[in-house]
Amino acid sequence: MISQKKHLIGALAATVMGSSAMSVGAAEWSPTYLGCVFTESAFSATDDIYPDHRNEERLKVGSTKFEMAFAAIDLSVQRAQLIGNQGSAQITARRGGFQSVVFMEWTPLGSVNLTTVLPPTKDGTIRAIASRHIVEPLSGYMASQFLGTCKDRIGELPG
Image (cartoon, rainbow, N blue to C red; front, side, top):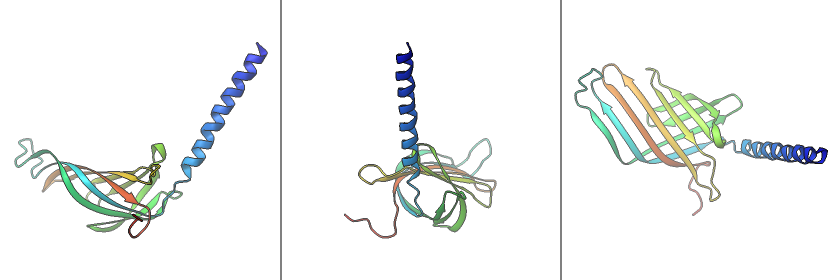
């Protein structure tokens, strides 16, 4: 019985230590720059937020090209600089689940843009998901989801 307990404790310790080692490895991916290109999208919008929803576009799925970059990423203070088609802004940057990095922007009008960037795969691909939730009283709402990839350096990646 005592021998079984020692083996069980040893197995649990190995599991916990293995998990800790994995967590330490997970924290190692801390990009300071990410340039992202999104090519697939799902989109819905209306120009009237009232109940009749005049001029509503129901879910539209397709190809698009949307680019943005995250610079000066500092996860220790949870900040980054977003550079996009509307200029640049200081945003929140936090560690997400499964080694991801999550960026959140609150626009001056109170809308939310959220981007999750996954860690590089074995082949070096860095995948990203961007989501925009825009509500403006005079122009309606827009909900969009984009899928794309990022690179963690400026310039073209070696082919």
